[in-house]
Length: 302
Image 1 (tube, rainbow, N blue to C red):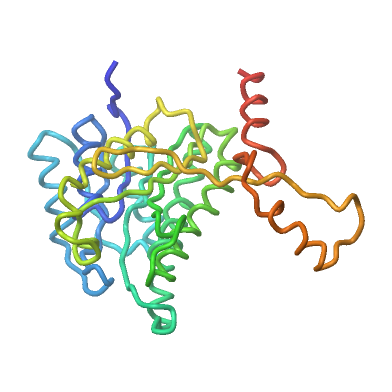
Image 2: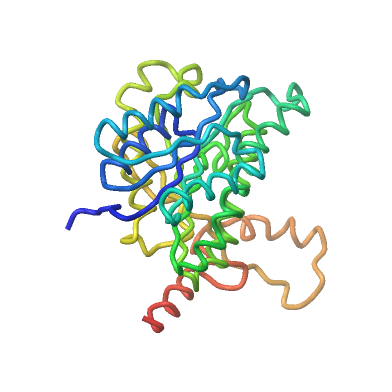
């Protein structure tokens, strides 16, 4: 049976263009009522323009869907509440939030200014928190919610010249790993999408030939699935680009023990190859439980 978002309300930030627009249109095409957020600034976070968000709302309405626009900054704590309030006023609920808004200020670490650092973290990290924080009480009350944060391979694997951006995107992984625990008993799924797409943010980062075939629409199906009732998984990192999808995980290598003795630096040096080995490494669910142990426990609970 096709996945439907009929009766569902979804907030998509940074949805005036690029991936956010593709997500918003895809949600609406499947029946969702969509709040389209976009400040309308440039890729560096400068300026404001209500036109991009309104244009996407108009597209949705012309196609027979239902949408409202929000023109505020995701970095504004109060605007996180405003987005939720708009949805409740218009449709009575919020079912999923897609934290997609982002900017770039790429520089080698010695050239990054304090403003470059703060703006990136304000938009990506605080911006995600602002919306999730205000949507979370509704999710708990409903005993249902879906959160998708837009992270990046730059934060998981690294990319030259993106200390601020990569740091912010890695912070989302930490947020997800806590929120998946806090949301578990309330049927709140929290996952990350690590996308690759041809947008105005990436057009100057990659050669044109590399961006061919990487339309934002290739990413949206994974975002929609992670936002759906059908998706029961939480705490996942899903990469999506150009029709390719895969999961990424953080693993823990096997422990090397001193047998209770206090190690010396010489002992660490002597055992370094064993300590850094990934042979037999296993994914973890949290700091006290492996993913295998968690899944076995969850299976017993039905």
